[in-house]
Image 1: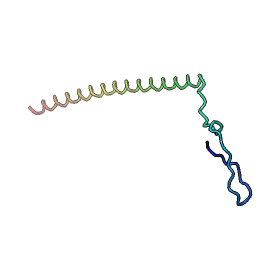
Image 2: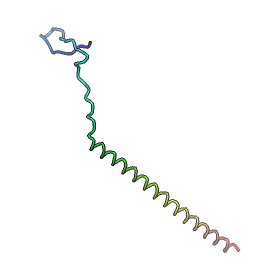
Image 3: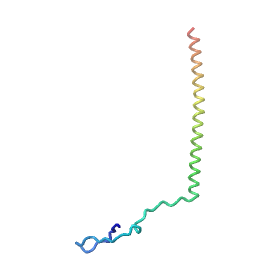
Image 4: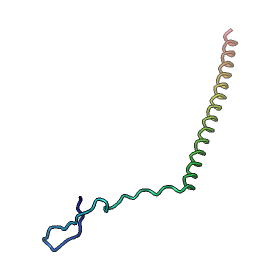
Length: 87
């Protein structure tokens, strides 16, 4: 059993405390459960964010493939040029 501060008495008196029942103490406020609409909206936002990431990833892979092909073409062209001028 804990003690709760009741308030000051007369000057010089020891502080007064009252016995406190463990069940009557201040309760921690729990966050309210989300409303179904808010939960649904958050799920939609998560889904949209995930789709955006997937699309961006696909675009990055496609761009990487195009750039790799271009680099290979330029390298092949450079090699042919070097072979032609070396003869």
